[in-house]
Amino acid sequence: MPAEAKPDATARTSSSPLTERQEARRRRILHASAQLASRGGFDAVQMREVAESSQVALGTLYRYFPSKIHLLVATMQDQLEHMHGTLRKKPPQGETAAERVAETLMRAFRALQREPHLADAMVRALTFADRSVSPEVDQVSRQTTVIILDAMGQADPTPEQLSAVRVIEHTWHSALITWLSGRASIAQVKIDIETVCRLIDLTDPHQEP
Amino acid sequence: MPAEAKPDATARTSSSPLTERQEARRRRILHASAQLASRGGFDAVQMREVAESSQVALGTLYRYFPSKIHLLVATMQDQLEHMHGTLRKKPPQGETAAERVAETLMRAFRALQREPHLADAMVRALTFADRSVSPEVDQVSRQTTVIILDAMGQADPTPEQLSAVRVIEHTWHSALITWLSGRASIAQVKIDIETVCRLIDLTDPHQEP
DNA sequence: ATCAAGTCTGAAACTTGTTCTAGATTAGCG
DNA sequence: CGCTAATCTAGAACAAGTTTCAGACTTGAT
Image (cartoon, rainbow over all chains, first blue to last red):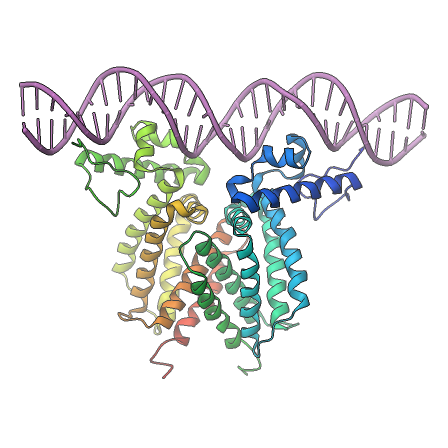
């Protein structure tokens, strides 16, 4: 029978829980990944370097994360959890749901700004991911949805509101990309976020009977 | 002095016009790129194959397009022009600007659906592009803007409308990605597009005095 | 027609993501 | 404690993007 359960692709969501040592390895890997990404972005996260930094053989790294993209998406999951925790502590002050969501997203945005290389690596991985990473990418998307719904303070959103939230996520991702690739300023991003957040008021049942 | 002007990265927008033979080479390359992409998507566009298919040395390919990403973004520019031409012929029928834009985008979407692998290759390249491809990506963005403004039938858009258009573009790109990676259905995309297009009516000066 | 400057070709080399293999190590079970 | 199945390690090998280089070819100017 198994010695340590297989960590494998589905580590996070499925089957056998990891050994303590395995959990430690996994954390070392994610830490190394984030650290290298913070330095030089996507390109600086080289699998051999990650393996060495986290004191793990290359083959093992690939057993935990079956590709560089998987690794970086997992890194994003990790960072998102962090961020959700942080954002939760200081709820946004806006009057309307739209204002609160915009405020929250801009706060998240400024957090990413502090580590632009890391943001670059994570977002590039996220949008470059193909079908084989869908479950993980979906998880990131769900996490983002939760953050936005939290900001709305809306426990039971209508289908229309969920559509609006999806569009907001689209805008958020894409705006992030245009900023990261230097094609839009922060001011521009702010305007885009605020613009799209208007959709929330538009679909707010309190305002549209 | 030069024999044939350098094609180089900036081929399209700048300096010296290309020789006939160079123009022919460029077209052969783009054609090969689109063909390979149509077959197997991003991964099937291998630089050695493109070079061979277009009867050009590898080094030459790299002189015309300094990276695979550049090549695929250029391929997208090419296809977009095509599409703009096609869309122009049959203007959308909707009553409101929002309807017309949504109709146009869905029409474009269905066109991409016919060559999903090609769409995959182009869109992945577009979102994966880093700063070194900014000018070309920007060109694609401008072309998209023109298509949307065309559909609105709005010759002189307000700044607010331009914001809405940018958000629509964000949504368009991101929705495309989620569809290509199998995380959203076509119906879902349609809803998202229609939802975001509501922003247009919201900012239409005729409706908001 | 000749020449200089720049371009194209063909092939090899280099880089980094990914796969594979043989042997050492570990975890849990009897 | 000793087995057994699985994991981990070190390192080689492979794949595709990118770079490099020497030599053949074009082009435009003289």
